[in-house]
Length: 114
Length: 114
Image 1 (tube, rainbow over the protein chains, first blue to last red):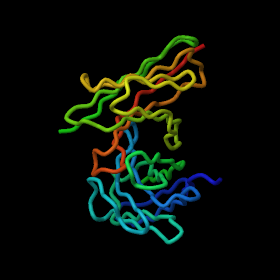
Image 2: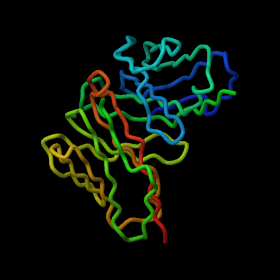
Image 3: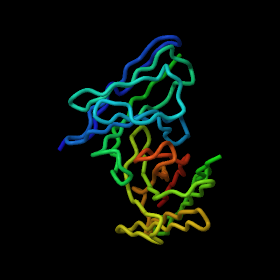
């Protein structure tokens, strides 16, 4: 069974640019959640996708957008990058959206905005 | 406003001792609480889940307690080992719109010394 994978591992972008991060969910999982983790902080919920539809969003501006594909893999897009977007971006997959479905995290993508 | 607080200062203990980490929350009644371990540059790894109607949960050397009156969870690692050194995060479920979306504390760094 393959776990959650994310690409790329590291990324350096310039302020104002756009970035796309990718996540492959664990086999059999139809739900993907994205989190942003700034240095020294806990992960913060960005949004969740369930069967290709957005299923809830945290307190992030519209320049953070996402997609989920028919194979349940997902992308996180960030437009007009700001310095504060520098963080570890984590993807987590689960069997569903119900309260007791455990989330399995990928290793993360470290984004640095200069 | 809703808040989750963990000791921000690192906890240093000697090998073989019991480590106790605290998670306090306010203005919320979660259905359950989870504890995660996170190593530097890696995604969180799920350790234990405790429901609101459970007082205590154990798994090998790990023990979690949940006091909904005090709005506090304690996480214990007995017979600690240097390999237990990591950041430990507590997370509540459902704060950000329901389902299995997680709201994390800031984490406590544990260092187990020989």
